[in-house]
Image (cartoon, rainbow, N blue to C red; front, side):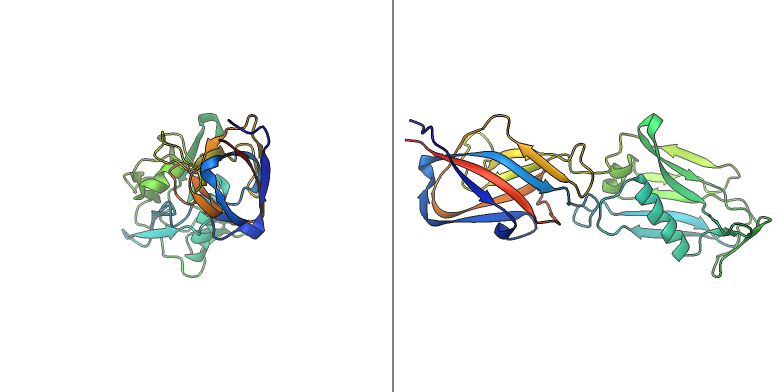
Length: 283
């Protein structure tokens, strides 16, 4: 027999115990073998990072010509964060500034970059564009101190995808683009497959008290996603229908964990959230 009465419990920032876990302590032991639980509501800020060292999707390389036939490879490690195509390009430009891989328009003071990562909305893709570095300083431009010199033949920077996880972010297969650096024409390439700027498609909510004999990950009580939510904004979820799940064990505390669709712990930056669970007795 199932009770028609349900009892809510609320977890918030005060229950946080780690980047991905929250714990609720009861005043006394509770026999959860006589209880069913359902996720009622959750409010959480979209504050988990999509490109991180733990996902190993934060590294790629590119080449850039220097004096004569010299071509130098530069390795980039992106700081942990959430990026769109503009953010990736801004970081790439910053890196070029730090390593003097640009020229300066003498009239406007604008910087001229020779490689770009940008969105291509019409093809639902990310586009990489490489412009040939000339054999001498163009009229109307100056080079920054530390510029590596000009190649003996017009040479294009190459994007090197040597990290499959980062390739997933921009939709590129492993490889070097263009395959041949020397060339007087600009080079353009769009994604080989649909880019996944965020590898986190959904957030799975686990409860350690749950017992589901039909699932290998028996703790699942619900899922949410960030669809339509800007980074840093609030995700609000209310269950359209309560999904009551059996529990097990005698315990004085329960722990909720947040993981991604591959059950990797979710590193939540903003710990300020509200979770409402419903408990009811069963005989």
